[in-house]
Image (cartoon, rainbow, N blue to C red; front, side):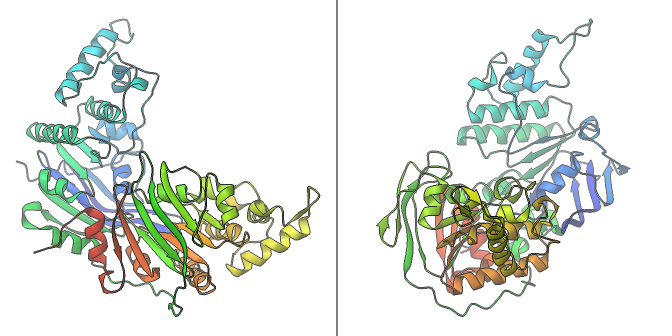
Length: 500
């Protein structure tokens, strides 16, 4: 087995406005070995995958192929170098056949330059048989289930002569039987000398198939080595063992009486058996890894989706929420994670975004009163210390932090009783984070109840009165006081048992 990595990152840096996604990281992938890339949400794993596959170009450092510097200016360059990725969320074409999806862009050709349909189907069947997928290459993709589509995506990734195979949460949509088949596929790829990068939040998978590990934390390299030389405790400590260098505002008030009670909320595909309460003036944190179902639950609470069963009580009265309008009328508002697409209309000015859910307050006899719109927008944007040239400025021209403040101001103007903040400080600078945290504390002190979904452990620990941990659509822990530590959060979220 070679001691020279097939593919390596050396001092790679990648920045986005206000965010350092990768800070001089390193990673090495060896032939015939599986390297697990481990880190909590926001550690930089997805950015690494996009860098290796030519989607992102690094701002600094080197990519080394067989020890020689290379540049991937496009995804085609990376594919030509033998690098392929199997993503958790795949892009396939429902109207094409299985074989057409597998070979799209590099289909076998006849001597006349036409696509060789018969050969495509033969080679597609061979690839599918190799990964244990009993699928008809001529079937339309629209007629397949989610797990089968995922197997087609795996076959497509393997249809090029890959030297490096990146598997990004590959088991997320697979049954246990299909997962076992995937493990056998990994062993087959290792025997062929492929270098495999395996990304998973599931520690049982990591220890089952990995030879090496690399840990990232907050976009930085933390450590690497052989998987046989570490245990779960050591990896958890590496994932979360940072000092909390952010000062969170002091919490001096005590939450009041129960305001909201959710009993037995279920959704056919996203979550099940969700029961929790929320007190007046409380900040209730929700923590979990990718796919835990937190955002999906929040969307159901706001009426974007409808649970299949369950009861919502506000002030101990049953409240039926079938739409966002029902939620707003009940005093529940939702600040989504994707503020650009779901939280704001970026082509509209600030004042119109802020007043959009409150038009009854700013209109008379069906006509908008601009003076009232500006007054309402000014009141709430000033409370959040919004930095903008004027309230006429389009939201799309603001920084990420100020866009977030506009979305929060919009919902505060409705004077809600419960505000749901989904990743409230994602992608914003440290100054804007401090402003949002300070204002959250002020809201809670004034009696507003806050549900905060966050993937940042310091934020969860520093801002929450209680924390509910979710895994695979279910609540697995409710933590307070001394039980609320980085290690307990990660253990429950990843399904890791306590050390003996």
